[in-house]
Every structure is written in structure tokens, then in C-alpha cells.
Image: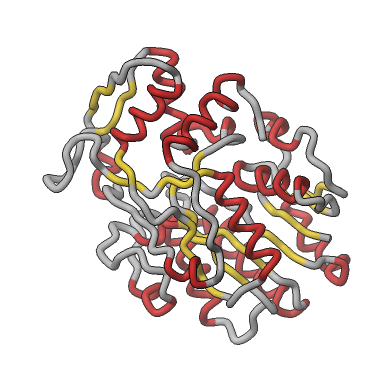
Length: 321
């Protein structure tokens, strides 16, 4: 059996779909399952059973000899969450306990880290293990993810194969439930269709013009392709950047969404809220050298093509993957 935690969420539900398409249906779904907005993410998915996240370790203790692989994608993903007790419980403690169980039971593990661990980027965006101790995330969410990375690197025992995935800016189907934490592509589409314009934050730095802040945006279909590659090949264990390696501006993103809905570009700028000015990443770009060296040689979906696919085939009809 394969376990997917966070299975009703954005990346988790897309991964379950990708596993199904590759012929794998013996899946255990782990999540909260109490949010109706996430129910449609699992519609038409094939799996064996659902296990509430609070009961998962009890279930795992009874079934660990039957589990062949775990994808741990469940977490509190709100980057504006400042309740460190909650983040400790759902992100740090839960992940570390799972690492320990997988190490003792010899279960291969992939877990979700985050590009939020890189903070303002002054230390670069290289997934070299030696740099993880010096990273300074800008928010408690990023700190919780970085602490898990530190934990697994310092652990004396490890799963037989493990990979921590530093996801950059993922966008795509099945993120309807995420609210303000949904991707910029999602919010751009909603704004354009409702008010005819796309509002971006003015720059808070003299190094960037308004809307020229840069992010490494990656389509969720590419993310699940990477996850399946690691699942099937199990290359060298370690922490990996999962991005395209090419940053794009928010202005370019806006233009791509306007093109996808056949409307002229109409971007306006608003002041950045004071409470996020000192926590805002103006630039992210994954160094994917390690990913390529691990053998993943598939091209990433060109950004404009990915936006068009997402907007026309999913957002425009509220469809799910």
C-alpha cells in the first residue's frame, strides 16, 4: 500500500490522480476530511481507505508492514500563520515523528519542504545540505519546514530512501479550497473575471519595478511528474528543489492569464500591506542542478502553456483534475 498524507489538499489530490493514471490504486488517504470544499478534490479517485490525520500513527503502527511508500504532503500551509504551537504540532512534530517511524520500519518517504525556507534569498536558492543551517526563513511556516529539513539531516537513522521536496510556487487545478493561499494565477483569473483588472502589489524595493518581482512558478502537473519519478526510481536520498529553474515576473503572469481569457492586459498596482513588507520574497528561482543530476530530464511545461491549460481547462469550468 501507498500512503498519501494531505490527500484531500492541492498537491496531494493531484498526486492521487497521477498515481491512478499510472495504474496504482492501493492508496491510503490521510487528511482532516472535515472541510466540504476539499471533497471534490477526491471525486472519482481510486483508493483503499481514508484515515483521519489524528488517527494515522495508530493506523500506521498496525499496518506498517503492509506500507511500501509514504508521500507526506500534509501540513499547515498558511504562510501568514503565526501560531507557532499549531505549526509545531502539524508541521514539525508530525513530520519528525513520521520520519522516525519510517526509519524504524524501513518505509521509503517523500515529504514536502518549501522554498519558503530560503527567506529573502540572501543565501541563494541552492539545495546543498551544507547551507540549510544558515537559512533564515521570513515566517513561522518557513521556519517549521526548515526545522524538519534540519531534523532529518541530523538524524542517526533514516528511511531506506527519503527525499525532502522544496516546492517553489506551485499552481494548478484543485486549489479552489485554499482561499488567500491559492496561487497568484488563481487570484488573477478570479479578479479579471469579476472586475476586469488584475491588482498587484507595488514594489517595496528599489531593485524591482512594480510587478517585476520574480517567482519560480511550477505547474502542479510537473510537480506530480517529479514525485512519480522519485517514487519509481528512488535516486540518492536528500533534499531537492522542485521548481523550473526559471523565474518569471508577476506582470508576465498577469499577461498570460489575460491572454488565456482573450482579454487585453489591464494591470493595476496597490500598496503592499505593512505587515508583510519585511517578509516578502521579491525573487525566487530554484537551482535544479541536483534534480537534473538525479536523472529527472523531462522538460517543464512552458509557463504560458501551463497558465493557458489551467485557465481554459480547469478554472473556466470549475473543473478538477
